[in-house]
Amino acid sequence: MKKIFLLFLAAACLSPALPGQTRDSYQEIKQDLDRAANVHYMYNHDIPPCATPPRGYKSFYISHYGRHGARNHSSEQDFDKLNELLSKAAAKGLLTERGKELKKRYDLMYPVLHNCGGDLCDLGFEQQYKIARNMYRAHRHIFRGKAHVDAVSTIVPRCILTMGAFSDQLLRQNPRLVITRQASNSTMAYTNPFSLYNSDVKPTDEGYNNKYAYWQKAFQNMMAERLHPESVFGPLLTDLSILDEVWDPIHLERALYGIAGGVQCNGLTNEDLWEFFPIDELFALYECYNFRFFASKGPDTLFQKGRQWAFAWTTLQDIIDKADEDLASGACPVRLRFGHDIIVMSLMPLLDVEGYNQPAADIADVKNVFRSYDFPMSLNMQFIWYRNRSGDVLVRVLYNERDLPMPIPDCGTPYFYRWSDFRAHALSRIALARRIIATTQAPPKN
Image 1: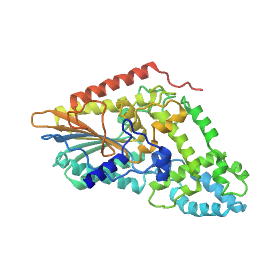
Image 2 (image 1 turned 120 degrees about the vertical axis):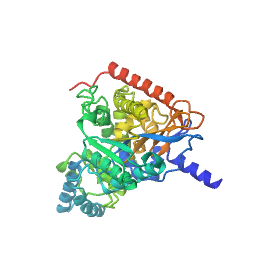
Image 3 (image 1 turned 135 degrees about the vertical axis):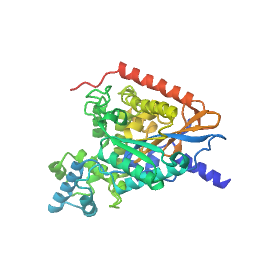
Image 4 (image 1 turned 180 degrees about the vertical axis):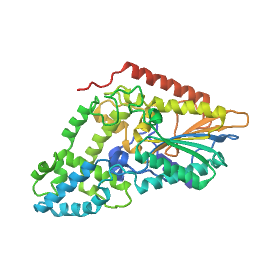
């Protein structure tokens, strides 16, 4: 009984809030400061046991979408500007003892990070090896013999390397597998539906941090109101005027924040920089960036009216179409897709998943309904099909290798849904997404 309780407790701590439950993101960040890094948070490989399929059902088909593995903070400018600030302050004798400690640590980090912005890290490879090994071991019979595995990636190098790491691990498990790998513009419409390869996307819709986005002004105002660079740099510098000599103070604070958050992803440096942030300022930074992810790709109705998450319909449509094709032919039992966090972030409201589909009442409410650290490095969704001897087909969905409840009736066993019901739900949500796109406007170019 004690073991069962501990497993339940572990699963509860790793899952989004259930109906009627609440989560305090401030307290969760205080318990683990790395959560303050938003989507730089590292994948938790401590996987609780998954639900058991109904008697007589066996898995036979897997369709997957995964984010690239752990990467460096992506801004080269941030690396260089922080180095410039600390170097100039040291040369002018403006560093306090705390400032000298920060410079000492950053001097060790800078050579590791310089010219490596956004690069896949060794820890990112390791994450993919573990996830691929778990998938193989859970469904060994699907990967038997010369089974065909089709893998596609966006054209971004870290995603291509992630695809290579995942498929290489599968080949270590079974060298006879036939794995086809592709990173091509031809697949970008569904591997990155926020790119211009998706014909629905207009130039002012494109990407994640779109300068034309309806929410950008609110994000800039939020930072101006919430952030206090002097609270971060005051204990480090004897003269804060040097900040303006290097860059805008808020940009410098954001640079230090981004670098500090990305440290956990790179195993070549173990320098911790969180202690240089007052906890309330750190949470303010988290809250600003959390809002940006929510408004950009989450279940936002304050600014986007669903337009952004709706673009992910092409990814879900590909999952459904390929399943229809593969279940009919039996030729390809495994489909792997590799891309970015924002695609999964949008698939959640698109599928109307509880815990990821709640709009905010206002900007201040975003932190209560959306947590970007729930979308860690190497996050993944696995759609797994099961069949019994009579040919009845069920589907389950795993999110980061944990059972994910769908907003449709299960088959009588929790987390398992009839394929016909899941397919109908997905197609109805796709139809809704397409209506949203047709009835909303891309941001104006101004």
